[in-house]
Length: 298
Length: 298
Image (cartoon, rainbow over the protein chains, first blue to last red):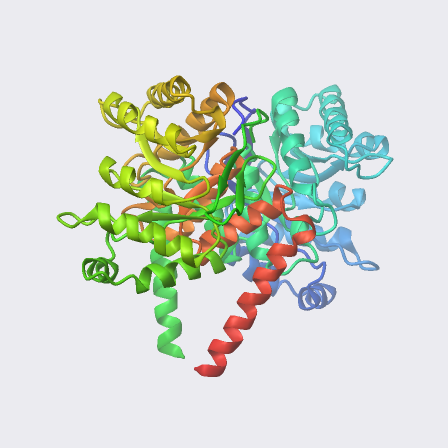
């Protein structure tokens, strides 16, 4: 575990509820479910203006311990600007945790971010100059925080030093726009371990440099690591544990995947963020009760 | 993950099979099952000279991936010297992996160690002067390796600096007896997290100092951490993952506990010791086949 402290990132819901991301706090799950990519049913609903699954996903993820909700409305050929804006309004009305507004379409972010109160997380800017020039003013104007991806015009490098340089570029450009260090979270980009045997060790080295030299929080899309492998949830759980042990305090993942959720709770317990295991024991009891109910209904 | 390299510990079975413990190798599970503590059936068998469970435990643990087998015959009021010696002979005849001879009774170690060929691991010496004075000559005389526990005459301290001082004392005393640095493995002593919320973070700090300043391998009895908590195997699995991420290369644990085994395999995969996931995929297929067989027989 790195001993270099990182700055704390404070996000705020529309109604004023804070989620703090930092070394002194439990791991912050950013719930990934509200995203039509690879989810045919959700995509069909959104195309027809139906937000029922968005609502149930929001409630289920909050109940499962998400402390931020990612919102993504990207469906090629459909009106992402309108759909992402609608998601923001609906989720803000339904639950009281901060949101992470997720799009690769600048217009969608520019339309949706002003609709959200509190302090949102914008997902994401890259180290490409056109991305930083367009999105960092939006982050600054709305007092938002932002996820910076460690890739640039040359794509995603497998070299930890190149990824570090991308991260540093985002942090420097953010500062030029008046965005505080603590409002930048870097995603060092987890790659599939089945294709690149050094994908995990590269992440460990990249995280250490980014924490030590830039002092910012780190996040990742955890499930990329297990792409193409069997037993994905268990690999994701182990990967997150290794990342947490190396100083990652938040990630975009699915709290409804039990191995992932339990790994995060166990890491909180073992790293001193769940005194006497109150959260661990509560989760364990709920699991036992759920199994009993399932058995009774079988 | 620590970047300081540790010395490699090489253990050898009676028939010449090596198990290497070190940063460049997969995690080495020391199978903990052959131990009558808390196992009534095994204790009763041993009292009657029956070694059937010892044999089946040896075979099952090797099949589940143990790379060393711990042998413990401690039953208060019974002849540990004879039972431990018998265990060594039986297990050496049955399987071809190194053994870890485990006793708190010096006479039992002194009788059993000379019966084992190859290069055994002796479990354990403490930093108490009487323990080191009696056991380190045995380690040296038989060219064995030894586990040094980080406690001394004052007991087990919760202060990482005191535990480090105990570890340093064992390493120094071992050197005086001509035992190489790489033949000492330190157990920093995992304490129950349910009683001491800083038990995990204390381990992380202690490991970092021992690796960085003494350059020796580390081990632990992993299941101590979860004592008194529900969901023990999952806590043990997470704890081992955090320890591995911080540079622990071996532990005494149960490879038949699936969450533990899978966490270790996943860590090997993610930290570059299982290229393209060959071991992970093999284990996953075996699990799927076992589930099918179970369903067919249900």
